[in-house]
Image: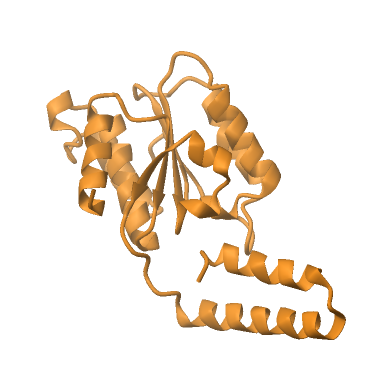
Length: 213
């Protein structure tokens, strides 16, 4: 299935109320992942008839379109951004997921977008996983996990989610490429001097955070 077909399938499932509660949007660029999340969010929360979703014209669609650009507000569309340099903290994750314990404000459901799911720390990922495994009753809730690669997420999270591939990722920008190269070279040098595998593990963590580049 091509990336366009995969997104179209997910959108059709969302339109008919049959989308899996957790969806991993991986591959593509940051902008493509965010756009796909916005498109699914609009489809899930659109106020028009089923066959017209997402209409792009109702209040719900317009609010989510604005929210993608960090402007505007939809009370049932929630976005979690990475709050530290390389990690999405447990505190930010808990605050983000607190809304899942409440009823929607105006839509028929809620949508939670994790913008950099690959940066969820162990405790943060466990908090999200617990909610997926023990969801609050009644209200439809969907979690859209954005990551350069689904392999950057735990096997358990992957097993609980529908995977939607958005195509080959974009090149790493020059600044990040330089940062990765410096970190890798430093860890290799320290490993050569000490023989400690801790430096190899540190280097692997750097590459994992960069999407395996």
